Image (tube, rainbow, N blue to C red):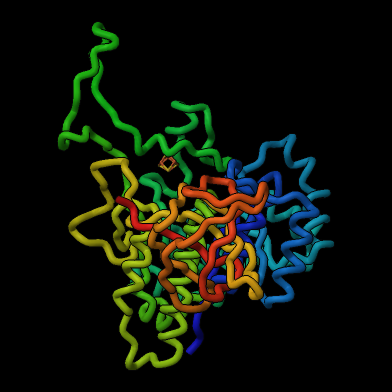
Length: 403
Ligand code: SF4
C-alpha cells in the first residue's frame, strides 16, 4: 500500500515553510511569471533558491507552476526562465500548454513535467496521450467522479494528482471569462476575481439602474456560486485507488489556512498508514477544517450528492481566527515571541496549534511588546509580543474562537 504524497500550496516563502513544518510532502508555487495565481505573491529566483534549500533539507519536493496559456510574445521569454528552473533543479514543472511543454523539454530537459488541471483531462485516452507525449504526472480535472478517476488509474502508468480540498469553480477550472469580462481580471492568468460568487439581479433594458431581484432567499441570488471541496473523509478510497498525490488548493489562502488544512490531512494520512483496517477519521479533524475560512464543504464530483455544488450565499464561514504566529521560544524566560496577526487582548483564551504536535490551550496572562518594550492591554496586528506559556514550537499558530 502506497500512501499518497500530501501536496500543499505555497503562495510565498512564509506559506512554503509553514506547509513544510505542518507536514506537506511537497509544495507547489510559482515564479514571478507564467504561474497562475498572479496575486499570490510568488517567488523571485533568489526566494525560490532559498525555499528549495529548505525543502531539500526536509526531503520535501517543490513543483513550479508554469501553467498559464502564454501568447506569442510571452513564449519568447520562456526559454530563459525554463533554463533557470533547470539550473535550480526544481522537482517538477506544472504545465498546461503544449507549446510550453515543448519548450520545457528543450530548455529544462531533466525536470519532470506534470500536466496542469488547466488542461482539463477527463478521460483515460487523453491520459494515455499525455503519457506518450512525455508527461510524468496528471493533475486531474476536479470534475471527475471516484469511478472515473479509478478508470484513468487502471489505464495509465502516469502519476495521478487529485484535488482534495479547497475552492471550486463552476466553470471547468479557470476556463471562464466572467472575471475577465466583468473585472478585467483573467482567470486564465491566475487573476480571477471570483465574479461567479457575486450577487446578481435582473435589469430591464429600458429601465437602467432598476435592479429587479431574483431571489433564492433573503440573501439574494448567487447563481454561479460553489461550495468548497473536502475529501478528507475519502482518504481510504483515494489510497486504495492508487492516487499518487493529494492536492490542497489555495496559493492565495493565508499561512494559517495552509497550516490547519495540511495538519488535518497529514494526521489523517498518518493514522490511516498506521492501521488501514482499523482506521476511522477522528471527528476532531473535521472540526479543525471548520476553523479556517471556507464555504460549506461538499465532496465535489468525487462523490456527488443531491445537495449539489450550489451555495446560495457568497459568505465565508469559520469558527476560529488566527491572532498570532510563534516566531521563537525563549526557554530562559518561558515566553513565546509572537507576531500578532489580529487583535489579541489580555486574558484571551487561545488555542495554540503546533506543527506535528498536539493543540494546547492557553490564557494570555501578560503581553509584553518587544519594540518599544512596554506592557500591553491589547496587542494589534503587526506587533511583536512576548507571551508567557509552556514551550511551543516556532510556526505554532495562536487562534481564538470567532464570536
Ligand atoms: S469567476 Fe468563478 S467560475 Fe469563473 S474562473 Fe473564477 S472562480 Fe471559476
